[in-house]
Image 1: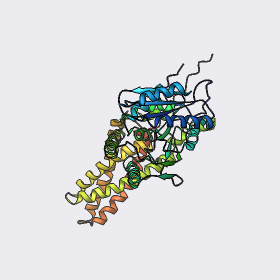
Image 2: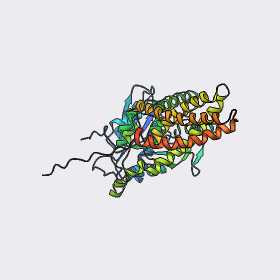
Image 3: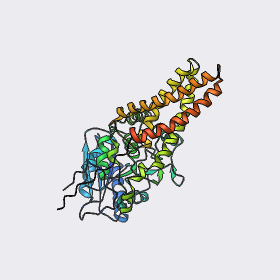
Image 4: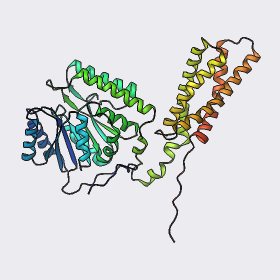
Length: 422
């Protein structure tokens, strides 16, 4: 019987214990009008897994509303080859196919690869091994590692690198290759991630990885050898357009905290020393102070730039208030997420309101400093104003950190369980 683990916190990573007679790995092959390539692909993959994979496996053909003989070929393969099954979808979409099959699969490790088998199959075992061992949550093949060997045209090479560069700059993604058709995920992770992924097409992979990374899940990358399929049916322009729309949608959702990624957080491993150390790691004073300082430096630079900009058309007090307000809202949001580890929309408005109170304290300090400077010097220079503001901001920064830590984002201590022993 399958256990429902779609709610509650993810358990600590652990080595998978194979169930006799059940597949450990389910490899999905999404296809659309691939009647010629499907048979050779499945038989080659099946032969490779039979020779190299040490656990039971299954290959699932996911037909994306094909209009040629692909459904008949898939059904024939499922009848003739042990461990192969097929499923038919009436709508197109790689993401839709993966979501459907992964959601129904009982295998603890779920993977997929393109039907053209552009990726060298020798990378398959290194791809899934970290998931089986409990080391990682997801695994991806990357064509952009230095040790990868890739054969493809200049246009596709440029598009791939440009896309991944855009992901890094817009969504702060750290994984190297979002669109390589060679990925795997642990089932308990998929059960929690899939309901959060909206895309049903080519952006599905990227959205899955971005959300997993933002949730703090571990993504393992495997350098692969990859040969471009010259007969690929992927339409680059339309795919790129949909990807840009997806990046905008995901970026906006992350910015407003609309995704409950906190429920995807993993505890430490099964070493009791790790578990006892966990409360001090993300909430420790040293780590919080470092994060606060980094954000504070960036906020101060933004504040000074805004002040200089506003000063062109307003007096010093109005320019100071406007620059401090804008930078304070961004500062509170950044510290909420990065320094104090608060995710989701719960209490977000309250935190911003409290952040504005803290902003008021900083405004009083900096405005008071400007007023004192004005009283001491009739016409202070712009550089003198900036020097005074920097000093006042340093004092305000210390006070802001103390208020953030003690009042806005206080550490929640777990309530000890009552001892029911008699």
